[in-house]
Image (cartoon, rainbow, N blue to C red; front, top):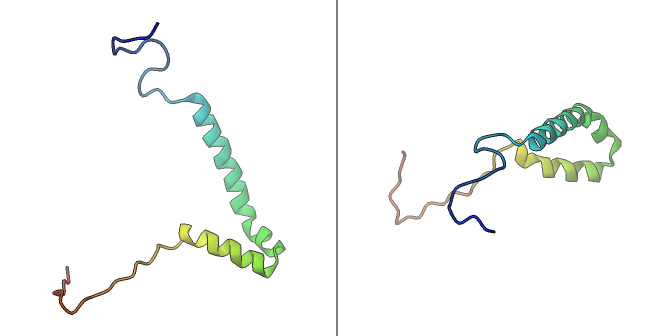
Length: 80
């Protein structure tokens, strides 16, 4: 029978962290830290072409993206 009262019965209370998600994130974090420590060695093992492809894919996570800026002669210049 469906609950039509709008009240919640059973399950986790609001705000209670999900234990599985917390454990999974901790494990993934450990794996990523280990890989980051090994990244320079792993890059040395790649061919030049593959190394450049990987570096280009990683760049957005290190450098901010540059947006093009254009100014029209009809628009007033705004300094602030």
